[in-house]
Amino acid sequence: MDITRFSTNVVASIVTVVLLGIVVTVKQRQEFRIRLQKRARRAAEKKLENYVEEQNAKTVSSHNHCRDAM
Image (tube, rainbow, N blue to C red; front, side, top):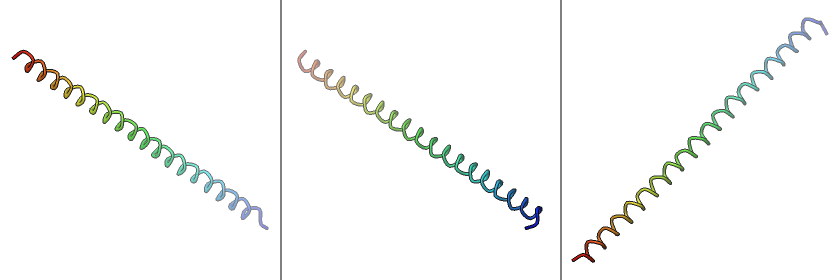
């Protein structure tokens, strides 16, 4: 086997491995970002649910207080 052909094959293999590593890294970053976005969305939804429940409880309490005052 010719040394230049061997070197070209080695370089091509190294480049392929590096490119695959970059692709995996980009994919992992994207998946991580998606997981963070989902986590943030769930936290925001939970905050909103708690707020709505709190407002409903205040409204019921207010209505009960007004009814008792009559």
